[in-house]
Length: 288
Image (cartoon, rainbow, N blue to C red):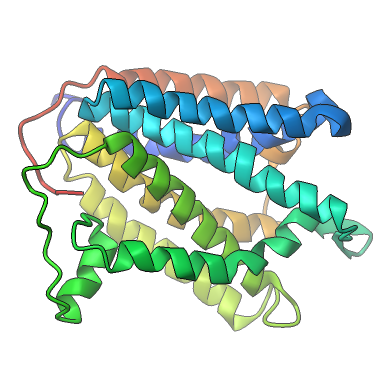
């Protein structure tokens, strides 16, 4: 059985995106540790601009698979460099204290103020929800079932896969960070509230459903774009397990677990290279 056919294309796409999640956390921690308070914000700004540079490169050569890869990594860099560190800066600027329980920091200040962006998220996501040209399966499900009559009209137009993937990455990360911070809030729900258990088990079931669909893909680029929400939804359950103390989140202390994080990075590189070398199939299971 060829590794360049289903279900291996979808599985490798899932693994690549899965390894990116802890590495993204590690990247943020390393910027803070290496550059310190005096230089972490210029470094974070540069990190975001490096993501923009990837978008420019992809835009000039808009081939689906390279553009999807560059867009995904651009989204991670922009989210980490510009979005997360902007919350770090203003939490520090406004003297927001971390949430401490039993003498241990359970939520950093930047994540405490992150839910304040909920209104902005809802306002901007309306553009994508009502956009006739969207190819997002999530939005299209609502369009069909609410009989909104919004059918794609850009079938013959060449799509900018890099910005599509980068925007998808940023928005899905943003949405589920807000969700987790809301359910963690003791004044609303709390770590062991039924709502938190609902998010935990709901994320597992939802991601399993998406994974079953993902392994039917035979085109790498489409598999990567579908793997992004699949993994991020699954990662909600990983985050909650870490919150409950089921395991040590080694990616937030990479200097203490350099060997383990090095192995994760090596595995990430290996699977990424394997996926990049995967030839595209003419089969098109999904239009995502």
